[in-house]
Length: 91
Image (cartoon, helix red, strand yellow):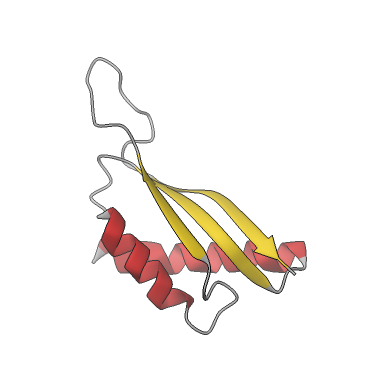
């Protein structure tokens, strides 16, 4: 369930980036999923594709990276986050 809300926010943000850049579409977007975010990467990818239908993000390549596993010795300060790493736009 978290994936649907997160995907909606990511699609909206990618659309705003395209608008700000004067682009007609989003070619690709890369998302980083932290190991403590409780987000399933594959489910998130499918939800992004679903929420993108009918928007400038439709058809964009979706790359979902996973953060490093949680470690007390080397904590990842973004372990609980989902981060939009990049948005590539086209004319």
